[in-house]
Length: 179
Image 1 (cartoon, helix red, strand yellow):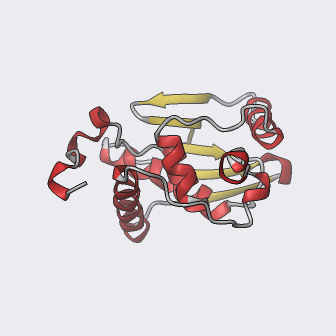
Image 2: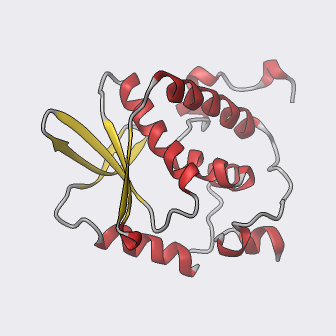
């Protein structure tokens, strides 16, 4: 497809090129997974790790406010810490913590674009761990560049070919790639 035939990125929401937090997480782990998700190709819903992640997210931090949808953002937890707004992302493990950090940074970046300043926390309830994340200018630049790379990926008519990586063994899309 020629460059001028591509949808306008500014109208991403109406053309399906809207980058969401799940795409950030998926892209950081496996770009193919992000492409599949963008086409609403569902993973194996009975996959044990997918179910386990949902269960942990549902049962953890039950006293705090959960699942806030704000535009294209789906925030796991939002709370006040004094004068600060804190957005938290719940993960079942720190195995893909770099991807989780970028997903949370994306949320903070998008909130900033909406005029809301927030701090971030990554929560790993099974490991009884939490990490604070502050969106500085360097991290904001990383998020902006990552969004561009993902939008480029989403414009591709076909997914990247499968590439075996360490995350394939626990991926709910693995049958789609390797069966």
